Image (cartoon, rainbow, N blue to C red; front, side, top):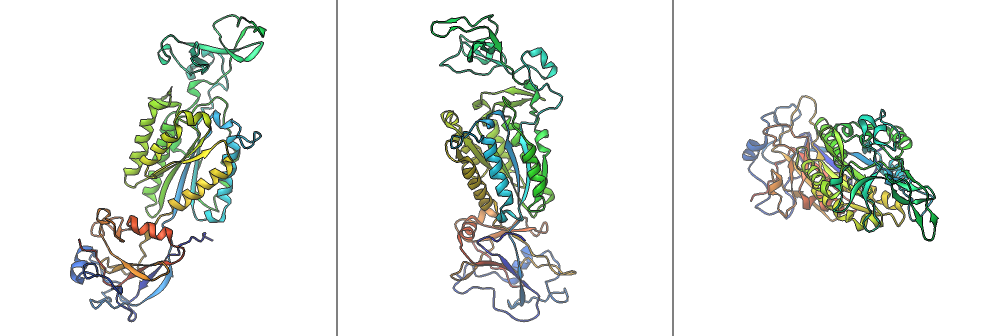
Length: 483
């Protein structure tokens, strides 16, 4: 059974079998009370018969109609989740050192999928980075990587302010530094050293530090940075609860790899491409992407290969990807959840993730403080995305077999518990202004509409209503907002 939401939506379908009240609501202004039936029908009708018992024009210009009440639902919500499984997700959470960020996030996602309130939602899933199975599992030397090289154990040396910065070549480093293979001292493994040197030397306090042992790492090319790879889901979008086991199977088998990096741009590009394709084949659904990550991008695409990025240099590209998805047709919103620790806060990661979310049409990112209960915060973020992602759009009710809907005789009536009002038809989004109102997803003169979309003010009222209903009335002259 589909989950119950705070606003129960229903619709009235007029079958022209008797009389009912006029579609003009009490107290409505003359300017917006309605338009002449002939002018409305001329601008909105598909030139098919009115919705009557015989399919030949049962609704007349007297604004009388009859109907029966049937249950309606919001436009179904589908989410394509792109989940960060880079090496940093193996870091322990501050609230419980025995639990990694990955364990907390995967537990929260599992709970969300098992929540009865999520029933009816479609979810697809992929994790990133995707690893090429043909690549070596580990490396210490570039030559061990072959065509997947170089080995990611090079950093800028000597360190500045005690920090190691990954590099591929000297040009990636600051003045006075060189890109060197970095290891750990055999007698003091936590002390970094230049592996091109034979020994670590002698410390006045610790004594002989031993030789410099190369650090094992991953080959750069073992991560896939092609957007097409992330357009292929680990689990395609399936509706809950029917598809729950398949989704949970992906979460159970996925594992972050130590030292793997974060190709945020390719992953989000692929996610939006899949969501767009899904939305085109499911026009009656609301489709969004959810990017869940724990930091800034560290890999970007250069042709078919991965290239290291410091993060900031690739942020603009990721923002552009989110913006393109939001402005496309169909529009794909991007929600962002950031699991951010102290180090990421210092690297302005929250502001960066906010910028991605804003470009993606969702205002701000959901920031999960890794110093607190990660699982609870992540689950709260998913719950809020579920509430915000649920569309304020209505399905256009289908006429009975052999009949057509006259789009000049459609009204939307909203009851917020304090009274019923008829919302005005505004024809297109740009006419919404600050008024209540609605419009079709496509001009019915050009194409048969799939959805009735509500203006932002109307949508906010629907979401805030503790109780009430929306009704679609067919067969009564449309109340048109005149500007």
